[in-house]
Image (spheres, rainbow, N blue to C red):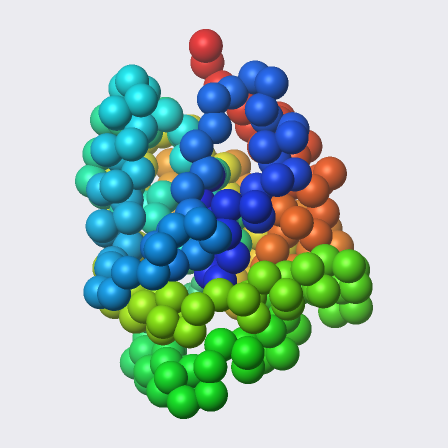
Length: 238
Ligand code: MLT
């Protein structure tokens, strides 16, 4: 289970509670988030390679990957690196394409601002894009606190990793494992239309829109999110 930017593994608490009885779960903190120390110069491809090493080291010859946003970029990278290891994919609130020129520029501008002003500016800038309009105030408060605590150098290194990620569009039509694509009804970052279009490129992929949720669909509507992944997992052979 691979978390979004700028969260950590606790993003998956509602899914860990739901899946934990039936599955062995691995929910790493990406470099610089949660309990993982800051690291400069990391890339999405390195993280995918690291996850592969951990999973194989723990004796998992094949496994399913659930990613949300930055986690979806990582899931697609895992497919690129080791398709034979991937049993199924859940690609939530993410996209396959690389950043556009404007998006790369915006990442660079944000890196410069954070280097100057610190990560304290992030919650106010980001929460309205991560959460649905009129979000749950408790969730907004918790995320705001967690994000503000993240070291500035962790944020800037991750923004670089996001900016430098590879384009995975050409991979989509080669995906041969069962795949579920998830969108959030009110997600302004990766719209339902964009997620649905990605699903249509993946042979046999299912598509589910989570109602009453923004970008962080697993946290904003865990009931619907868990139902979607539960039904998907139940549909898999073996
Ligand atoms: C995320 O939620 O992981 C980010 O929105 C990803 C991105 O900025 O591309």
